[in-house]
Image (cartoon, rainbow, N blue to C red; front, side):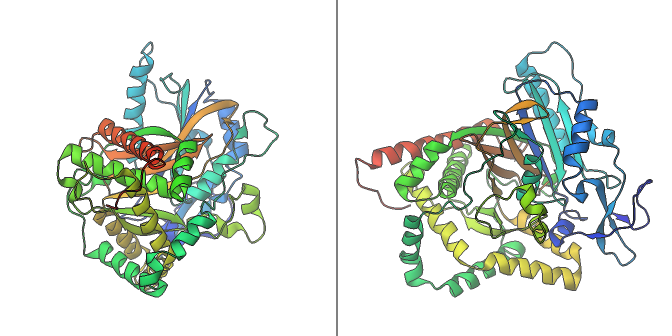
Length: 481
């Protein structure tokens, strides 16, 4: 980290903007997390002066964090220091041989994403980059990649920022619309409130249990090595692959309506089932090994997706930055994957997530990290988060995207997806909705995980869940896992 007084030449003013606690944790000596956002474009993008001007007018004004560097003062306190931004330092255009097929350029794109995913960003300039892949792949005419440091903000605030830079492709004068943030139905809430959870366990006991379990998982209890967890030291510095599949949001909602579950319940159940299918395929019997998902949650109290204008209002700036928590969710036990009812994975995910959302453990964890930061400094809190990631098997995150097709710098966006990188885990799963589709992206340790087998298992998992739900209307429900 740079120290105060070591800022880049041309610094502008001496305003000190404090770095949020989570921002400090994600840019430390033990943890440095990035987010890649990949836009698949339907037309060529400039990548020159026009793109530079777009960045100057659209991106830089969003937040001072896009034109500041993180520094320390003489007491070691971190803050954002405004600097003059040379946009050319943030724009990269990779070059590859001419005349290759779209399939060959796709291989180059995957290799390039793997390369930039593990590259450390310079602390001498604002912590973001834009990469222009100006070659045609089977999925896109050109591809635009934004690399953003997690210290700038979490998925919610960063996506809000990016959505302010795009326009609706059908009518740029109209605002983007988003699915409701509140996915729970009255039937779903009633089912949970009247279910076995609340008959046998009080919310206070659930909170105590979850918080204690989280502390143990972050310090003493480690998931065993498995087909989804190599357990290697320094896995965050190893090459990664990023693979994606698309699922129909309409079909996901159909499953949810039949099972009285939320979209997130269906997604989580699909992920759990797909992972156990993959573990069984790679090593039969390994699906019975304990595996824990670290599920990231937005801790903002929101009933809708905030626009940039909402965040910019007086008193709403607090919605910017890193405001999220995490919960440990164990994969359901499975006696026999071949005989398991796919529907049970959604029901188990629904019960597990609802139980943990009912507790206050996510807020207690936040309080614990803040206490750790105050008593021992941000590095100690960052070490705790690092061990939390290391001890679990994978991370699951979910972000809501717009319902309409968007265009970026005049280029229609066919699809886009995001992926946290540089995390000490072999597997990261990111989910993002867009135009009635749900993009499930897999970030995995290259050479350890099989990308094609992994995405194939997720497709198989949802197909079996969907078919089972349609068949459920004609048969009685089976027993749980």
